[in-house]
Length: 215
Figure 1: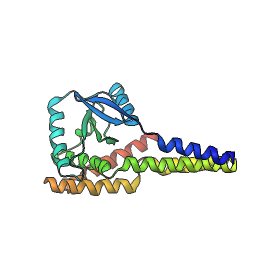
Figure 2 (figure 1 turned 180 degrees about the vertical axis):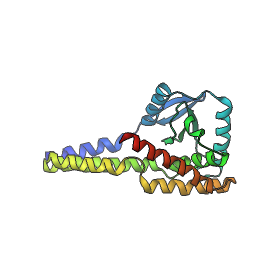
Figure 3 (figure 1 turned 30 degrees about the vertical axis):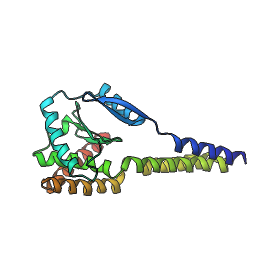
Figure 4 (figure 1 turned 180 degrees about the horizontal axis):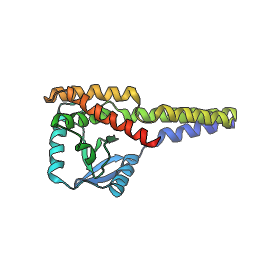
């Protein structure tokens, strides 16, 4: 009985958490989930914003065009250029999308840049952060349940490791969903959808390179 009560208390705690924080982005206040706000501050402090107002305005112009033709045209998105040489772009909860300056040097057209941005918008419109968090909570609850109800530390470790493997990154299914959504937004915005394939090729080449370096 005591183990069951402990499990119920734990589940109530992990499901109930979800505070928000306000950060300043581009001179305006943005309300974000606390974890995204913390991550944004770390990015600004450790990486920094790429200081090129003209380029930032160009990215915003493309992004606003894509958002206007997305499935969340009335949602608030924020696009930030990071001063990083890494070839990467990513999204955080709350509509925060980041593009590294290093990626821009590898793109050959506005349509390819639109492909990158559209893909990241797709992660937001498909609610991938929320779905991944739900998977994480479910896995964590299963691991703690296994430990509380059986007293087996080995089972807890195995369950946790399995969950970490499943939710690392967005996963193939979510990446394909972001591609499909992004392609739709590009088409509605008048961009050549095939340009997204070129961008995926660039990013996949870099992924293989990073893996080779890691080995």
